[in-house]
Image (cartoon, rainbow, N blue to C red):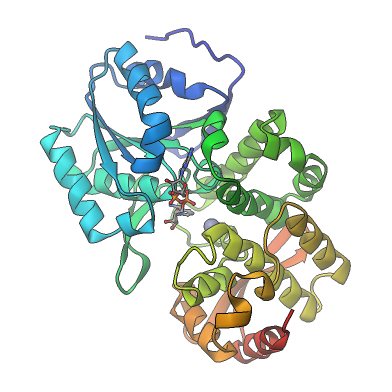
Length: 382
Ligand SMILES: NC(=O)c1ccc[n+]([C@@H]2O[C@H](COP(=O)([O-])OP(=O)(O)OC[C@H]3O[C@@H](n4cnc5c(N)ncnc54)[C@H](O)[C@@H]3O)[C@@H](O)[C@H]2O)c1
Ligand SMILES: [Zn+2]
């Protein structure tokens, strides 16, 4: 059954994963087509919508209305907002609610929210009855360009982030760009760091385009859909080449080894959102690449200029509370990087840059060199 859709101006990006292939539908207002699309994909299913309290306030009713209009039963499962829900307790709550809602093997879980809800609901779907399909309806910019695509799902352990999880690809992604209108400006900016990342790691023309068009993207103009679609295409291409991160997919970690250490040093608190850590981390990766003689200083300056222009932090000193609480010393940061899962036999894996638009995987970075590099930067007061 193909139902005519009201929103003909949406962009569809195909994630080419053979029998696990799926579409990402991007556009202003596409949430209204959720019910029709689900009905076309899985006639007769029951659904459960997993969301968080904040997202529920704005977007649960339209999602439910769309499903109801297509005759699809939906049970809402609402968790607390924030990273804390990506926990054993959060998983238990969602899993039990899915069982109570009688979500069977052929039904669908719908993740409506940011990366927290996507990771949590996706993982719950992956283990419910040994695997139930799920649909991603990402509502944060970070989720629309990154976490909803690629099939990584999971929760945190008290011992570290994302230590428990599964690869479980969604069967459909619906990215309604209007949802971003209710996102806080700071969350939007943090997600933008991941958009800029795609330019920096593999698409110089996209980075230049962002330098000229970022204002329209932030305002919600057509640049927003274009940027999200370009980001999704970039991620989809990498995931299609390397679904389980044995090679190329690591490029997506540009800025993340430094970024994760900074997130850990600030206790995964509101001092530093993930995307903000990535912004500072990308600058550090660029500066470190320049120090190794791989990247021209002029490119480093361009990266800093652009990220700062949209209001993202670019230096350690920009991180809230740096002057009062600091970030620990270079050894502590290095230890946090070594705990990161991207470590193999004492050598650190970094994603470095040879140019804007050309990132490379460096598997044998000497920790002592990183330590010296960080020490110099931590010693600066402003
Ligand atoms: N699976 C992956 O490949 C992958 C990739 C990157 C990040 N992640 C994970 O994603 C998570 C971060 O995602 P996030 O930044 O979206 O965080 P999030 O899900 O916590 O969302 C951020 C905040 O924005 C709110 N929010 C979301 N959409 C909104 C909207 N439309 N209007 C108003 N408020 C809205 C949420 O309630 C929350 O308070 C982390 O747990 C990270 O580990 C996963
Ligand atoms: Zn990220």
